[in-house]
Image: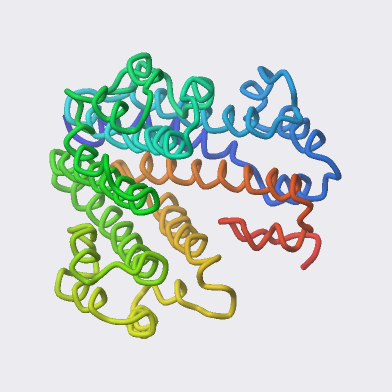
Length: 351
């Protein structure tokens, strides 16, 4: 099937869906509300998230609100999936695989804290029908080793098994890194089965994302986990766009200062701008870089895979920003401080 036939209908639908995103005035209205309940009511009554939020019993419960917003993203995924078959359907399902791994990380952290997994039954990102593992099987796990054993027969078992006896802090770091590696490997493999033109578009998106993650992981691995260079290089992801193995190895064997100097000379230089706290704002800067990449791609998009990939990521960033605004209100942050933690740059009443 050619791309014109494959994408003509879905790209038209996605452009309509994109037109329903929040505008700057919506963000400003949310940030100017005095109470969390007022923010939720605004979202329910004035935005595309209204139907999902109408199911919430207690609008003062941030966790319930966040969960419904995140589930809205999964609903949009399923709408897009219906337009594809064969390798393209598998590709979009591989994009959803990340939310499965995020749920698994949630369960791992809960187990590490000695918590009962049954309390997390209603806070998962996605429905059981999209899991490659059985929640019913793992929900009664007594400890981490039992949890991993119950994943036997799934793609996660071999990845997590070697770390079942590790020190708590390093355990989470290693296991989450390996889950991310599993996701990007699966995504890369599915992306290589797209048409040649779509594959080239996808590889640019993926390569840039991998570059950014490698920079962040190396920085945090050196600064917070004191990992030796050999460990650092083992956990970097392959197939980056601008940083090849040679460059990554150089960064892993260098210092934090070496990394800052190197990155400052690349297209990712905004990551190491020390005008604000680097530890606090690096992840936000990574997300802003990707936001701008996908925003520009959506504008240029034609009858190819770029529109749908960009839409899904832009929606994810919008939901993240809404959640950041709700959390900021919960903790009493000012309007101006809240703006600093958003992926999207808001221009409005204060400028």
